[in-house]
Image (cartoon, rainbow, N blue to C red; front, side, top):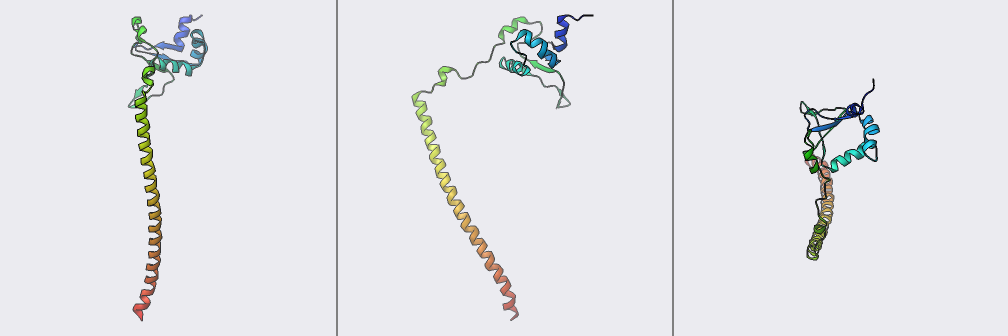
Length: 165
């Protein structure tokens, strides 16, 4: 008995029962049979990257509050609905959030940023100087503590001799 092409495709990937998502059931078969038929490659990672660029998100199945590990990979998009082909026109490639006109800073804004950077650099230099000073003072204090401990130890050794005499 031969299986139809539709059944072969259905075995490797399909829309879920609720029609809100689609799943890749057999990754190996999907990459060998389906991807080369519709795309210039058979790389699943590239396909998933393309899905992400068009706003599709991977669906994580939860079971008892934990992520459920399944062999199928499931994706969803707000405009990808079973029986609603009119929504497909709204699935568009994402555009960068920064428009090219906005990407160019005006000369005034650039100068403000440069001035703020200079202030930050000066503040950093000042903090570095204070930190170096504190390190030197800390080193001096530790040497003094060490010296006082030695003197205290010597006095503790001498004290019983003075008391006993």
